[in-house]
Image (cartoon, rainbow, N blue to C red):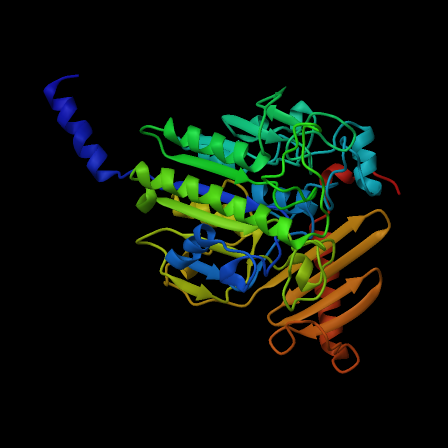
Length: 441
């Protein structure tokens, strides 16, 4: 390099500051009332809460679906998961389809997120980012559906929906802990292993910006004490419904989030990193959804309203925001923060103007649909009004006045209900998946 080119490179570097890093943290089945900052009295989560304290804590944050796989599909693609097809409920243990279209795809060897989809990690990698996923994938077991087919440089975690926290095996005995495309035997509590991999990966980062996705599998079942390992069984006993053990699982996630944040500070990258935390759906019977109706698997608020927060020091103003946020909004929002434009139309919305204070929160029309076995659950929220169709039974609620969805206004507001019904039908038509065109019920 000549003296002239050396100084030219220094000038170019000064003119083009490094793009922000992104760390996306996801909890599994965490209830809307299971963090201290969201009202939990029996669970202490100072590290997770610090993200909301330094940035924005969302009071109306929603998952795209009431179960694992649907939300993760929307999170990775920035679009309604219905556009992909076959991923409207969690993929079953051993790559099993749980409703008609999913069963059809599974028989064809197509149950999972197709590599043809434009995903958030792929776009980050195309723009010079190092990318990694450590944790629960749940978007397909087959090699063609695994994380590195979707833009991740490295992967460590479980492929399916759940596993024993110590043996890392599913209910059918299959080992589902993988490093990249190979199964891996390892010792330790899964939450600790996931965070340990994330911290080690961060320590290896140098000059390039990075996108780190850490989808913890906790506090999803089985409910197992992080400190309850029994050498005689090689695991810990399952304690379904024991709130104290569930609380320890959440607090272990919090401690490991703290380790990741500590490493970020040690690198001097906290100020230049967007950090996001949310849950993939509402809590199951082990969790606490506060005053919200319903739980995981439903399109009532308790099934889809989740704790969510985001920090980016110096850019996102600390606030408690009433903005309606969905999982699919993270892709366009994070890409915008990095100055990256998606090449295709996304359903998610870039919320960075709201987060930086350049725009006021705004009303939206958003949709949900859930299929599992014979269950068909749908919902549309338009401003403060929400129509829920639960296996054919309709209810209409005004969330501003009735956040617990206790008062059914269907008979009092027939015209409003008809309008929402029409919007829901139009949306269902719009999101029909092209890969399901050959499906016949």
